[in-house]
Length: 252
Ligand SMILES: NC(=O)c1ccc[n+]([C@@H]2O[C@H](COP(=O)([O-])OP(=O)(O)OC[C@H]3O[C@@H](n4cnc5c(N)ncnc54)[C@H](O)[C@@H]3O)[C@@H](O)[C@H]2O)c1
Image: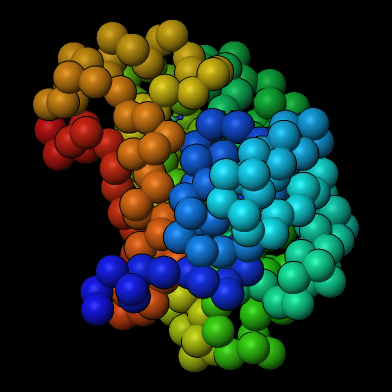
């Protein structure tokens, strides 16, 4: 039956940046679909709280892991902790990401450029590599990266570093999807449009509503169905692709 094929019973998942925002909603969705979930975040308290809330709400196993995805050693230790705790890793959602403040090219410092790339691009790479290493021997895995509509279209206010980092994540998804499918590992990506979270830049509000055909922002819950689809066997024929959830912004 089709709804049964969305179920994640017996699967073990990892979500980075799951202490709050979209990542927290994705971690909840995977657990509600049946998976045990490792909640990773650079903010340990938030990771612990999310893991506790998910365990209470779903009855599934959860663990909280403090990890800075920009640090390759911490990422390897994070993946090891998941395997040690759950036995194996089936689903990995590389959601953690940041945006440096919106500003023009001449105002972006070398430190800001490096920080943007260290987290969004190198951090996603660190996770992809460590996850693939433990999934390949199993001949199975689902890796779901988080892109952004800014990886496709140029936002009217200048945010070149963020846009470039997300375009790279989307292309990394394609290249990794092509390379890892022979090991039974599907790599795909979710690209949110403007989604209401705690730190949403006020500058994006007017810009979004000027163009988007929808009359509201996204909410973290709007991305939950896509992650369950990509994590489940239903999407097994999908390789290196992207689901864009943006209220139609990028079709205009
Ligand atoms: N909210 C949006 O409008 C929007 C749009 C497009 C894409 N995205 C992407 O969605 C993802 C989630 O963003 P969000 O909107 O929920 O933001 P958020 O700031 O609410 O959540 C991001 C989480 O990642 C964690 N994090 C940050 N740096 C980290 C690091 N180095 N290591 C581990 N964890 C780290 C934060 O502590 C936080 O819990 C990001 O990749 C973001 O770029 C968001």
